Length: 593
Image (cartoon, rainbow, N blue to C red):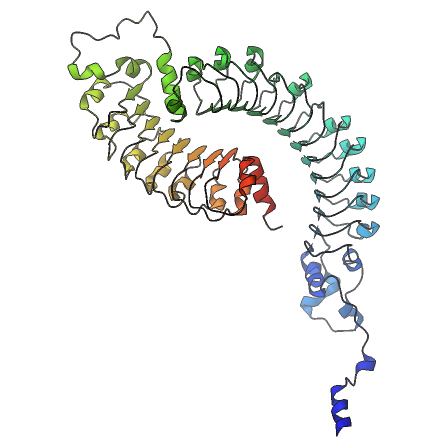
């Protein structure tokens, strides 16, 4: 009986079974790849690329060797050529020459591995358009790689590159090239032949000179060894964004680039701004000069008529010229960390609008105009009305009165004037003054900060509004009609009662600045935030955000993102303290590949 039991436990077909070798890549995954033309092997701990991957479109599958019959959906001979191969975040130390067996590849992702060299066979992948090689240990590139005529995107950041082949200029369809975080000291002259190149990242290298790249729109040369910028850079007629942060520049570069809109030269050694350099910036919208040694903002700053954002944080500026207030498009002026004299500290904390209003008030009145003084017909209640501000600055001001209503006399004095700016801050207003509607067609800037507003629906009627300041009120929501404010550029909502990012703001695509600090915001939708393509400043500090979605890192328009003072665990406080770029880089790195 015992023998029968033992026999029952034995595998009677054991002698006929071939010993199976465990596959590094599941056969089901390979089968799906033959149908879709895509194979994702990221983050699988691979130390080498399995041979069956290289031979995916060459050898028949295991099932075919067993003479298994195939249905219409399993005809392996009707397979699709592999066009996308993802091998990122593995432990690959080399790539075999057998990569040539995948000639149809369009995308090859090898980032985050341990590659120290690349095979020359890469040059045979003539259909390749995207090649990702970042976060490896590459010291050089095979010359054959430069024969990939269709290659449009090449990412090589975080490697050990000390030089690049001169043949790199043969990549005529290259539009994006990332060489950041390497050891480059010089660039091949042929780089100037890349006529399709639009984005070039050279940050975190050891470059001391630059080339002229005629068609590049975005050039990042931050964290290099640049002491000056060559005049040839002025020939870059397509250049729109230029990053020169953390170099050794002593002067603002003289750039005649006619399309340049954003210039970042923070963390250099610039001591003065010269009129000659400023005059060249004919289309500049954003100028970052923070963390330099600038002592004076020249009166000629008015030459920058297109400027909307000026950042001179942490310099040595002691006086601020009143002419800054004459910049017609300036919306954001950052001055923190300067030893300014003659301007009250509390004024600096009130925001750009109030500061510019104050500076405009310091500009001397034209002596030829003598008809502005009080007359015998001036009413006693109008003695408090600044008629000069109304007529010359188009400013209607009634602030710091702690009043529950704005007197009619103020509106009477402004009758018939095209008032553009209203400041009713620091009062006890519970609603928008009804007579404000007298300026529906002209009002562009309204300040109702430090009041007791719980609703602001009347504001939606002012279709010319560009700036709204509603900080320190009792607001918990914004009216849906605010989406009609198609010119709205900035809105300040700090110190209110918002528990989420106001729904209507996702629809105001003109927004550039949103300040929501010190509320109770618990959620933000990054997917919808990405649709605000002009949004450059977002303050969410001191709220109730328990987590930050990695997709927020895809909001590439952001230049200033404030997240401190929230209870989330990631990103860590050390990353947040490093600034916006570090936070966005971290968030992007957390997005699943």
